[in-house]
Image 1 (cartoon, one colour):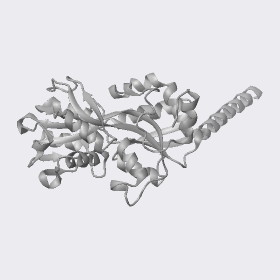
Image 2 (cartoon, one colour; image 1 turned 180 degrees about the horizontal axis):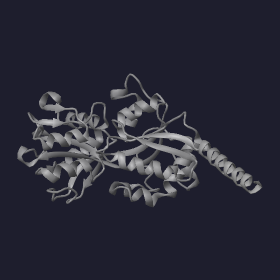
Image 3 (cartoon, helix red, strand yellow; image 1 turned 90 degrees about the vertical axis):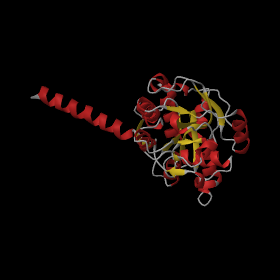
Image 4 (cartoon, one colour; image 1 turned 45 degrees about the horizontal axis):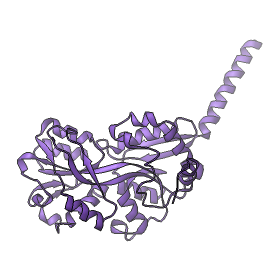
Length: 317
């Protein structure tokens, strides 16, 4: 009886310690994007890495991506989010879609990877440049998404508006389905390559990507400095046999000022302590490096991020 009592006591103590450890883990939500985009798998890997040490319990959640994620941060419905460098700038400075509701509580955590502007077109459409979209059926991204915001910036550079073509405001999965059903001629994807949705389209449709001219890329960077020039390598998608030059923005992790310094610090420590596992999650995740983690952060840095990167010997503005 004494032995049984000892075993039961030991089991109770062990369960109690486990419960304490579980209770001690800070729970956080990381908003990503739609399941067909790059945010979802990369965000899931970041959440898993950050949770590995047991100090955090980070859950990756699907969402309508960058703009919707920033709005969720502004209301403190979530603690972390994948956003775009351009939309983060607009949000903090109260510009464009955030002009009536600036998000001064927005804080930067880390840069993740470049998000390239894929303008996917059917070869039968004859579209070779932005101007050729006139009169065509075009997916411009989900409503209130970072993709749609970038599309509006791109077409404004050549004086076009939605009145010049037939826009469909669709997420990436719906865009892929419209291509397969022959219901659209072109679709914008602002995402890291390779995109699962575009690979899905290319598996059944004869498509290509619009190659942006050097002059256009230089011009848009002067007007919208959140854009950078990037290249989608040939062979990334079936049927695309040239290097495609395009504008890109930077995907970044953002938070709000109400999240504790320890939580953000532990998030970053978990990510970079387990970086090989993050890299293995998706081809684009290989772009995540400590050296590149401070590029193009367009909102003030969170104190937890400042502490982490300073400990790594990095210069933090």
